[in-house]
Length: 306
Image (cartoon, rainbow, N blue to C red; front, top):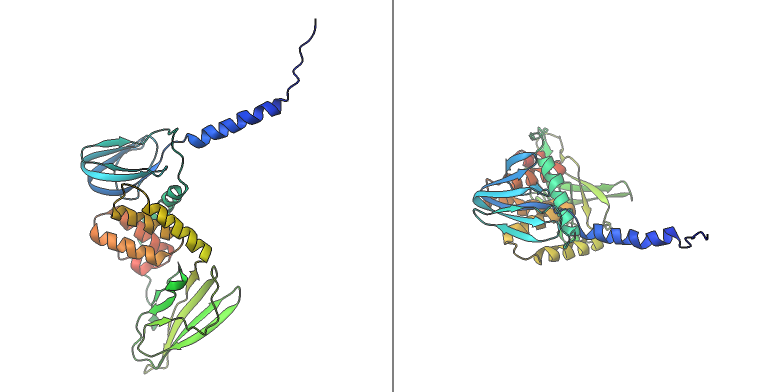
């Protein structure tokens, strides 16, 4: 009796099966989402119970948006935008075999989650201001783009001169320039030593000439210029947000502000969120995102306002 021998390579047969499993797992995933705009009374029902819906809230597979007397909009992890009308409900699918995870949306959802968690933390009290301390306004512990490079500070009264000092530890950089008395805004001089993208620079303002000899000065703040490749990538992602269908302008601006936060462009993001909070003063989700942004920049004075 002849014994049958298996001559094929077991690892060789497993390779195509392995790739089929990868293909299946990449196309089938549990959908997550994030609420963009909530108006009126809307609840979220999950395995943890029922809670009021708010802008920026993360939704998990199986969660139900239940509109009692309001409306809501949600964007799913595959990039689909849905508007839940008054009286309607929507349950996030537990699997999605046709869609695929959208990398940009995933990044925005992570940024919203991280920043709002910071914003919901302990109440911030504004730091006590020291005698003679000058408050810096811009840039304040934030990345900026090269076309937005300028310096702003609280106006200093009764001084004979104002100096701006810049420094960086690596690569070593040290530079200062004078500003006309009475000014509280200055451009970076064209003949100055160049600033390198991606480098963290620290700056402060000093003024002198009061009746007493004490020099008015600010604390140090940092800024970093975003590199051209990062700006190019960000602009591409902004265009992706513009291309999302069924998205109203407020929701679109909310996503753009979130994208700006992900690149550390906190000043631009704050401008958008402050405008939205003026339009929707009762939106706790926008408030949490804005406060989280200010906490990231250690701007306790602005965070304490909200």
